[in-house]
Amino acid sequence: MNRNVVIARKRSRLKKRSVFPIINSLVMIFLIFITLYPVINTVAISFNDGTDAVRGGIGLWPRMFSMKSYETIFSDPIIYNAFFITIARTVIQTLLNVVLTSMLAYALSRREYVLRKFITTAFVLTMYVNAGLIPNYLLIQRTLGLSKSFWVYIIPTMTSCFNMIITRTYILGLPDALVESARIDGAGDVYLFWRIIFPLCTPVLATVALFVAVGAWNSWFDTHLYNASKVQLHTLQYLLKMKLATTVNISNAILTSTDAAASTTNTTPVTIRAAITVVSAAPIMVVYPFLQRYFVVGLNVGSVKG
Amino acid sequence: MRKANADAVTVTKNELNFRPVSIWKKLWLQRQLMLMSVPMLLYIFLFNYFPLWGWITAFMNYNPAKPLFDNPWVGMGNFVWLFSKPEFIRAIRNTFAMAAINLVFGFVFPILLALFLNEIRSLHFKRTVQTVTYLPHFLSWVIVVGIAQTIFASDGAVNQLLISLGLRKDPVFFLGEGKYFWWLVGVINLWKECGWNTIIYLAAMSAIDPALYEASEMDGAGRFKKMFHITLPGIKSTFIVLLVMNIGYLMEAGFEIQYLMGQNVVMDWSQTIDIFALKYGITKGQYSRAIAAGIFKSLVSIALMLSANYTAKHLGEDTLL
Image (cartoon, rainbow over all chains, first blue to last red; front, side, top):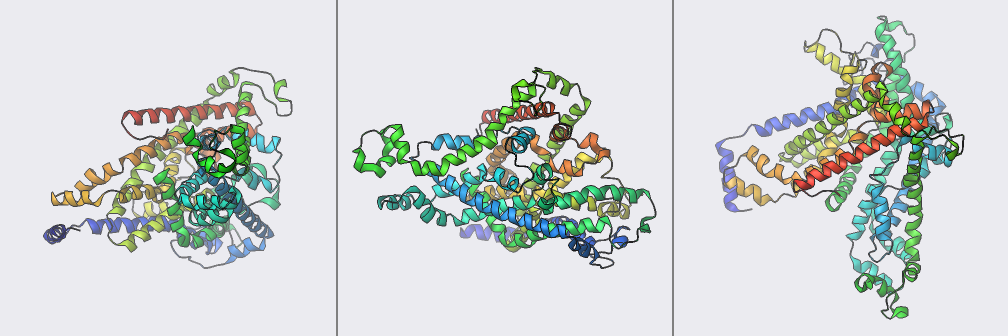
């Protein structure tokens, strides 16, 4: 930096100390507070005694500590099954996506490939052309008959255009010489992709994997549409969704009757709901801070070179 | 022609002797690339393009039990039915209202936040704020709605705050009254996505040439002058691209949250076109009418995006299309 600039800056700092940085920091702290408050509040409620929680007024810490809600949830075998299904779908979907998306991205990054333009256009258009809910439902439910099976979680979600584009952009950024020299040694495209390009794509594929995994972990609508009648295939998010639907009605009933303490059990829908929310959000919350930078990297790769 | 072939030629120099290659020969030589991409092409044709065929059933009285062309044609009958139904008109209104709120909130607040974040000198503090504000983006809508129902309940944190500040005597029934629903969705969306949406603006801001700031400082520009005359113009093209994109996705602005939060009492305010389609199509089995509603939505989306793109182009900006 120019010396004069530094001096000028120092001078202006001495002249008037702006209050802006202080206000700015306060605004940011307030922001952190309103982002975290609802989350911590939910955690506090989940650890609170049920009948006591109905009185409301719990802040950042449980008023009457109790593990009852968690005991209730984990005494029901359905939640273990839901955990298993959710993990299975997340892992399979992520692996499939990473391999298929990068393979496709490699093929579409080869400038000499005759079908490159056609296939790329077909993929990009899928971001804008969408037949809509019902035609897709009819395809999956009637034409393909995928409902009431685990495969409905996997087959319709094997690739995504956005992920393909960020991977392709990344591959295009790799030096051409890598591919060319291997070609001269007689390597075919499959070998080239698998042995050279795929390992080099680790950073961008980590991002893709994270996006896919979060999406898979968080999805509930496919369960709702296709597998609602099959309890063995319910996912964690769907369990929570069902709990939300039932507790809303009950808590309305509680509101209308002033006698809130009438219930005799130590758990109430309010605390159970909070506990399931915590259980289904915990894996993401725990893993997220460590992986955050990968998300951001991927988004920037995608946005800078589009 | 020759230039385009150059790469293929390097692969196959021996057999070809630089003669132009026929397309079939070329495809054969690129069979490994085809193996890697053509199955995926077929896959997206099946899952993304084939369902478009279902649109013709919007002009029929479709019963999935019968073969497709045994169903009676009804022309525009389903569309006429839709637009004579006040429920559908309300669904259009709700979709647009919530989309508009989301659009405004989704631009104003992330840009403000990015501007403020950009002013933070301490890297640690900045990173902490970012980590915390990105977090809700990764929570599912089910979880977010679960949290929102706790916070906005009549005994929830928001009501406690209002009462303790003396702004209200009795709790507000945020979740049970239709008039609050749109704003509730707007606020919850903001909570979930505001931080995440700053990423792209922060990236654009970091690409601004620092010399500009230094020069303006020499000329005596203060913090806010710099924001207005350097930072904001610096992110203008990012802003326009995102605006065009978001206007194209405007009609998608509501499904999960409205579906999860919309109880029967607030139905008149919460039902969007998608939920309408879901209700009539899947719950009531009136596929043709639901598909007609979906077509209407898609056409409006395309029209919106094209016009936004057109406007942006005429303002002299880079666009998507």
